[in-house]
Image 1 (spheres, rainbow, N blue to C red):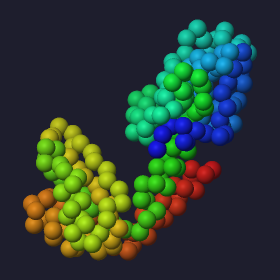
Image 2 (image 1 turned 90 degrees about the vertical axis):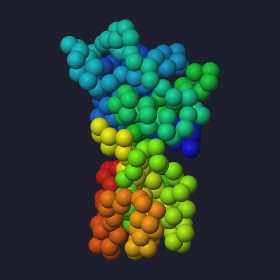
Image 3 (image 1 turned 120 degrees about the vertical axis):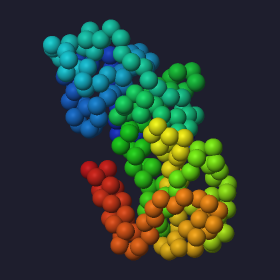
Length: 220
């Protein structure tokens, strides 16, 4: 999935001649803390709510209020992982997207991106969660997948996190089976440390409920 495929259809850019008041009004209207600014059709940068609130007056144009704006952006062919990295690194609510000639194409909303991730990450699929711990050097997704698939199951989603002050990692697997007993026994036979599993129907129902709550929140 590339940046050009998930541009927001809702959030417009500001013009350099727009006032700070208009910028704040639009941020409130579109429920974001950042908006792109264009000058002569070119992407100047992102203006943030916090920068606007630091100004003594908001009646002047953005051109007058700011001599320089931060300019985080991605190219249209950027992968989903690049988008996530930019959102996290710069703590953004929107991210500008340019083509390779640096023409402004639009923005990606963090809220819409989160909704897309929730819809495509297997959260709405029936299944269970298994958490493994291992040395980072021993991690091989191929073997983990082989163990799961040898029990007639499929991995819906994988999330890997580092353990602080350690060479170990946690691997969270979402698997399309409610009963993980056979899969757990197989992992233990291969000397994997199983930290936890969430597999009963009540927990599955709770996960489904939380997914629906997340979708409802994101659609507000």
